[in-house]
Length: 152
Length: 53
View (cartoon, rainbow over the protein chains, first blue to last red):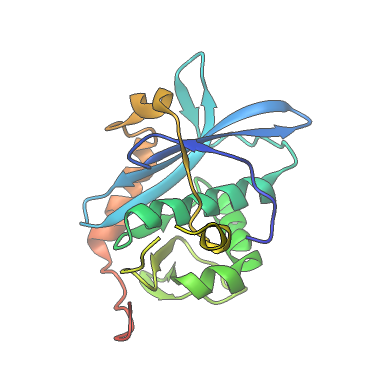
């Protein structure tokens, strides 16, 4: 990705990732999660702030740590890692708020040239999936690898 | 894998931290998963182009 990203670590199944956002608000732990959905091979992508003391997640908080591009680039990198392990998977993502969904759309747009080389990208609009178009508003996103039988 | 291939690979080499294994099998964002399931059960996945890998 053309944007800088944070280093991250994962658990051994590559379903959960952790990284630390650094900015004016200090160090904020972030967790990225891929969850199995009710549809085979489709995983829900979610991420948010992790409160280690409370052992809980907050995906609605507006962190304002001044690094949203870097955070999104890091999350996008986990998509490469996850689909490297699970190449047949589809990844569904939406924001916890409309503003956040727009932020995801901007993140996809900013990195579209590179992402589109490797993934089919769809946006949900009027209860239909359509090929992602820059500038369009979508309710959710779906991506899947173009080349599935690759060797790392 | 040869070093030059590793350097060119877009798929990152991920560091595993066993500390995170406590999350395995957990759903940390249940509301988002529920919302995703509602959409996915209602709206079929798009059809991929025939020339997919």
